[in-house]
Image (cartoon, rainbow, N blue to C red):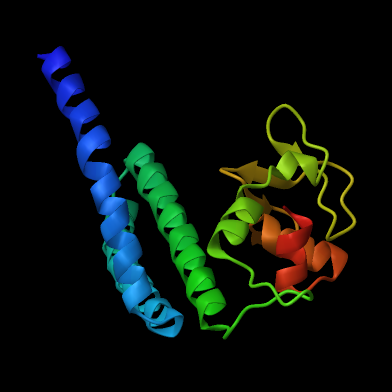
Length: 186
């Protein structure tokens, strides 16, 4: 049974995926870049709307759980709410950056989505000195003990409340504009 599934997957990758990529490339060529950007924004807005509704339902569940004694469920639902809010912020950030017409760097080349993704994936531990438990001294306030937490390459300071991804971190720490921060993180 597993061999059959592996064979099907292999055939799919070998025969069908190249055709899909050719089709996608042809579709992209048929539509101007602005039209593609608008469709991407519409898609992200739809995703964000779904996540917002999920968050409201979780918040409602959390309020109901507060009435009982089940602290484990409350903690779980609370952590899910935080995850959803982080996803909303990420989607909102993507929409904002897509709305910037002709995002160009100083050399006239566009800042591509791949460049932005690479910048977001740049390891936080190369930007701040991190302890074993993924904590660091926050550079945004007079911190003596580590209060800056890093999880899933997203930073959050329990002291001053700063939160964001690597791009926002570099923008605020080094005083750079978005495009410059993305280039810095390549």
